[in-house]
Image 1 (cartoon, one colour):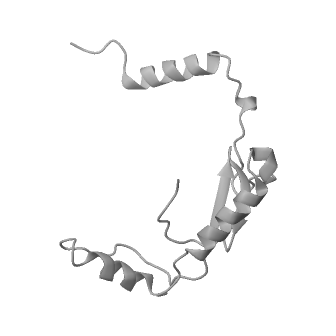
Image 2 (cartoon, rainbow, N blue to C red; image 1 turned 180 degrees about the vertical axis):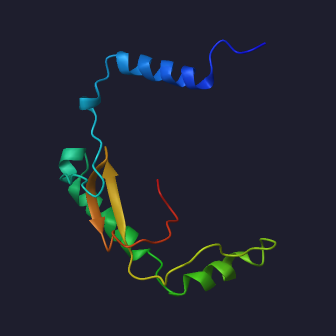
Image 3 (cartoon, helix red, strand yellow; image 1 turned 90 degrees about the vertical axis):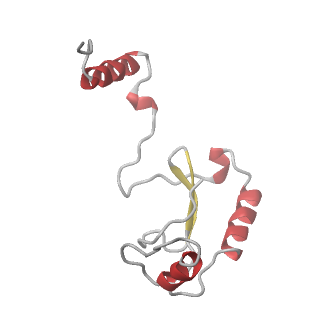
Length: 123
């Protein structure tokens, strides 16, 4: 027996229902590529002093040495992961970098956030 609606129709129907539920697209913030707004910590509900302490803690615990990330990955996983290999390029580690977002807006950032790099933790 054929399904009543195709999966594409179900997705379209659900999307239409969500759009009609009163949630206007204008009410939500969607940053343009490379054009994210920056807001003060207080405007996003952060305690500025506590945020500064958290950033300082993150920076003091950043691992940037040894700089050969390819070798670090091999040393870390080869013994415990059978046939482990690094797929793709790795760049040498440089300075630490990070960004704290709230509601899609930048609350804090440090380091070179424009540098393409491997990401290990995003919460």
